[in-house]
Image 1 (cartoon, helix red, strand yellow):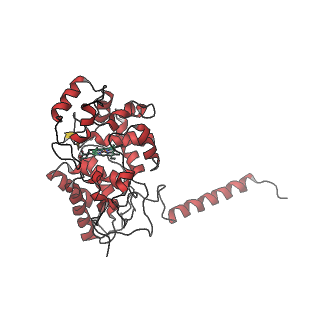
Image 2: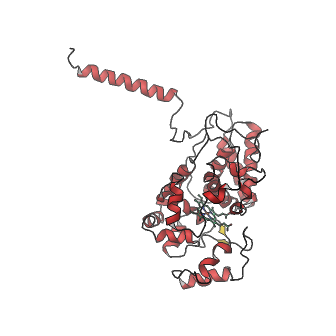
Image 3: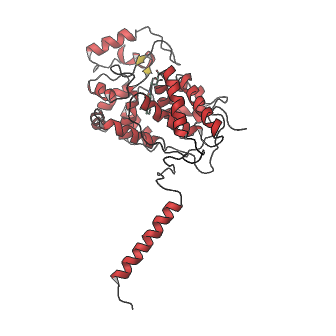
Length: 336
Ligand code: HEM
């Protein structure tokens, strides 16, 4: 029997390591995440064109015309990813599609139009390569940058779905009367943690809500007794008892973060700590031991990087890759 040769063993190990590293790089899976998506996915796929910059420029143009495009897009990314995964099924304009579900009627036309503009711009230089699902994810990151938040690396390589059904959103999206007891399992069902729930709820640092979602907390038998008196008075002045509370929401909206409504900062969490969160789903994050710690943690600089981390997790839900789905030419229609 050959004696154990430590020198020989280490040479073998080095050789095996070298082969493994070479195979890793040759496989093209460099830095692929667990969803099989990659950073800089489109780099080199459109010749000299920089897909992420083209998208950014279009979103910036739309944002300059209407800064509501930013919260509109961030909310759209959420409503897309939670329903059939991040496959742009939300963007389809087909009969009885997700868009027609009541919970989606408040999504902003300007945000859908911004996606069309970005997609048209990339199609014009690089047809049939960039998915609508990826355009939406890049546009969401850009929206956070444009509202002075910190960006994150968007992993690309998603493909577009071909199915969109109005029955799906109500079964997959949370409603504003929920508390962590309902939201934690809902997010867990999408592979997201309680920490993800808290960080992602931080999106409510920008954008608006309608009185229909606020009035149940401030009038009648179910008035939330923990709302500070000054905040209650101010909410009542913005949302009178007789405000129109139809869904789809109409009427004057109210800022989700009333301190810095157009800035992507951690103020949302400070509001919650001050018991000045707008929705039950926001304020209740402070009252549950599974989410309270993260509310405090996110109320400082930690939120900047934590939000991007959580968005990367959300952006991996149910993605289609490889030969699944298709690359739509028009984000509103399945390819003929
Ligand atoms: C956790 C449970 C959540 C609930 C119950 C919830 C509910 C709501 C409601 C009721 C509105 C107001 C809609 C309106 O009145 O038109 C809203 C707005 C918004 N939500 Fe959420 N949301 C949740 C999580 C999230 C997540 C995870 C994101 C993104 C990652 C997000 C992003 C937004 C944004 C940006 C707005 C403002 C939209 C605009 O101004 O157009 N929300 N949300």
